[in-house]
Amino acid sequence: MLTLALALVLFFAVRAITRGHVSDTVILIIAAAIMATGYLAGGRWIERRQPTEFMGAGGITEFGSGIGLVFLLFSVVMGLLLAISIRTCPTPSMEPKPASRENRRRFC
Image (cartoon, rainbow, N blue to C red; front, side, top):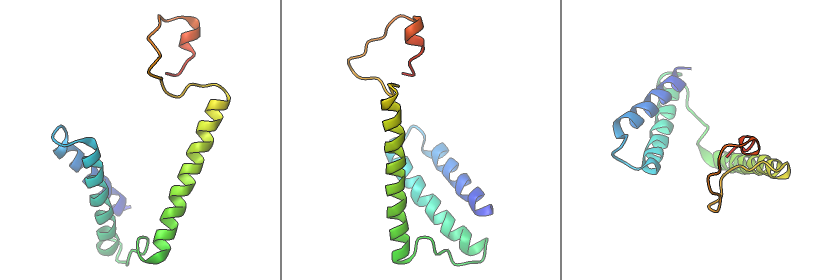
């Protein structure tokens, strides 16, 4: 639990320090690296164990499986939303329309 708290503190510290000075993409890359380092360090020093989650070929296989599962779940949800005709994001051709009963039901 302390490791999670350490990772969250590091994440919010990076966001607060770099806000407005660096692009969001760079901030997320830096934050991910700091959080991974904080997790590994916290596992070693706080929990007194050797973190094995990122080590060896098993970690790479699990990471790839996780990315594949996330992509699959995202695709299923987007497919269901498309199937029931819920517009998930505006298209460039959409122009703002006055508020009416039909327009209020749309999510975008």
